[in-house]
Length: 288
Ligand SMILES: Nc1nc2c(ncn2[C@@H]2O[C@H](COP(=O)(O)OP(=O)(O)OP(=O)(O)O)[C@@H](O)[C@H]2O)c(=O)[nH]1
Ligand SMILES: [Mg+2]
Image 1 (tube, rainbow, N blue to C red):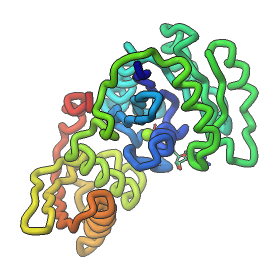
Image 2 (cartoon, rainbow, N blue to C red):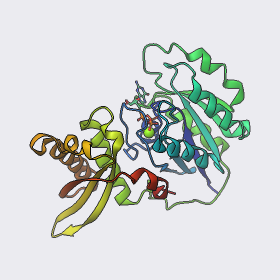
Image 3 (cartoon, protein in one colour):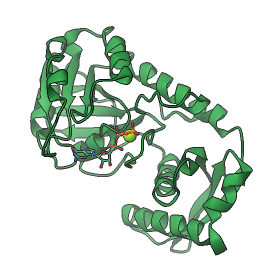
Image 4 (cartoon, rainbow, N blue to C red):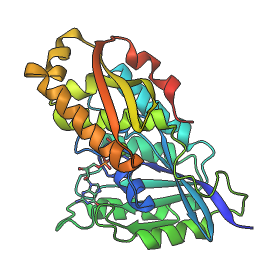
């Protein structure tokens, strides 16, 4: 029988969890930015090989700088995902010292047996890793310590080999050709949300969520209607921009990426609405 199992990637915000997921799968499934708290859904990416199937779960990064509803919801999603996982990858960035977030995650990981935990040090492509010794001293608590660069795709074969070594024999959980469990509307919304992070500044992208209102094919063109929700009326003009320039930039960047991924022409129409309550509904759209 083949091997199959769930591997949950946890770590502080911005350590490169989503980059790692995308590099492992060789395609972009999870969105990546240089800002913290980018990932909001636990996104599953599925690696299929002759040896079996690894389902990687990308989680929101633990983040303690702000104490709001969104942050506490994102933080609690991490713990839900760790329950019942076959392996936890604790991803760390040795360019940053161990802080409160690391201590909290390490405490959460104490509930898992050592054999079910890997310590993975990322961003090894950078010239210096000033805090690497702090993380190396944690190695005893993990079954393995592996050094990688998610961005430069270094060390990933070793990581995948080590994962297959410890995964149980199990029938496949997903169809062999499937790469993600994300329904296509969630994926479309994530692409648009990523462009909000690229084109909007400071706190503005954090106030946004994206809703897909309708989609479908009309002749050869795929039509998508979506709304960017912001929790405060005052952010609306910033999202729209002078003469509508910002929303056009966001829309056109999202459209190009969707056309590339879907291999079809797309007509994307974006609206902007104020909805102070979107964060309260967030847990209900978890990708589980
Ligand atoms: N130099 C270098 N940069 C990396 C590497 N992996 C990720 N990054 C960068 O680190 C930043 C954060 O990457 P993400 O993958 O979004 O991090 P994350 O852990 O998913 O962040 P959250 O979803 O906010 O928790 C981005 O600017 C990436 O390009 C790496 O191996 N080397
Ligand atoms: Mg992420």
